[in-house]
Length: 187
Image (cartoon, rainbow, N blue to C red; front, side, top):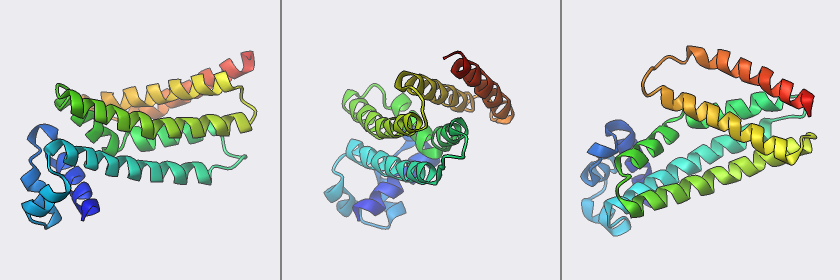
């Protein structure tokens, strides 16, 4: 039942936004009584946290699929870019951003959301750095290029809140790959 409520909470936040999030909508979407919901998640914050745990679990599943399908013959930067796009262009990231922005004045909720994000994404970043090192990259180079790639894609994802056109992303990523190739050639 916790899983069903967590998923329903995520879907409700995705649909109406965190500012309009009501716990009663979650019990209805999950097909359970409000009493059952309150038994598992006594507060809006606990339900919100459960929704994001659900989201990060799903996002991590996609990451694991991406990294496990990566082979030595694949372009590592293409794989990192694709993984970054899969997360930062996803509903999971957009809902997390919505909660942080709309619920940001609630220190306990914000701290918990930041902890979830850092914990979830740190393991992703560590795994990619390890994979890049296995391919012969220097650790500092792998960390820098990975971090910059994630920042670039994350920034573009946020830009999509204003302009819904993804047309420049491909051009931007092609340019970024050229810049990385130049950096690697200088090293």
